[in-house]
Image 1 (cartoon, rainbow, N blue to C red):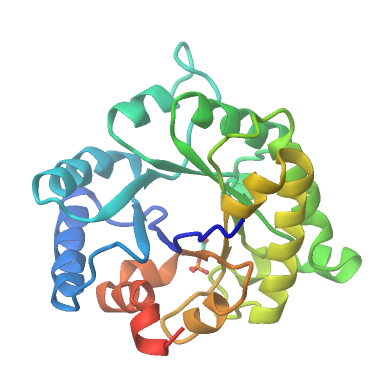
Image 2 (cartoon, rainbow, N blue to C red; image 1 turned 180 degrees about the vertical axis):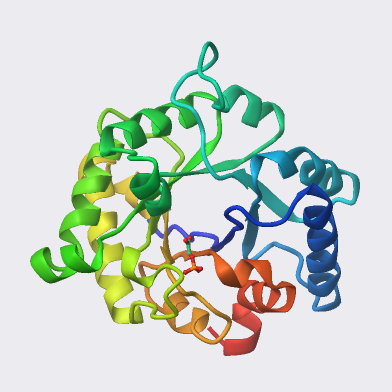
Length: 262
Ligand code: PGA
């Protein structure tokens, strides 16, 4: 069975752009891509604004029929209740958030999110029909001690434990040392780990899930290196931080098939 996976270019804005800036940014990105005849058919583009921007961005996307997907940067593992500051997956699904980033290394590091919390949040997202973008990745120290794939593979195993085989998920391999550092992994390194992660999906959720699930690379992705990553068979897109905040740069990343002949 040949399954084609639509590449996903995901922009993680982190804590940048207020709701007014977000609206202006999405409009500008849309015009830029429209001028370049980007229809969103061959490549899926998704933006992940801060929570306070989501309603405004969703309204704009809906009203202007902009071919972008929308996601959040975090989710509570609980549905509702006395969890001050948390955001339920129910609220995200009502805002038509298709995706949610879970277990980004910044949350694992600064907010002590364990593999078990990541697993609980993954289940919460799936329960509410929001596709989890499960982030895994090794630190520079892990890389030195255990090689590249050991930690991401172990993290993914915990996140996938007990999931339904039909679950719709995205996995993002983000080496911590490559995030915001300007030092991206090589395409071969990204391929090795993405392949190992796909093998975990096959083992835990079956071959069909492994064939259809998109595995992204993230960490210092730019318009000048995206093509090389996308040529790798197990890299199905990118989770982009810094470069997703620059309209022309992010538009060029989303248009990788036209400028590189992939
Ligand atoms: P970066 O961030 O592209 O700025 O390295 C990636 C991420 O944190 O998702």
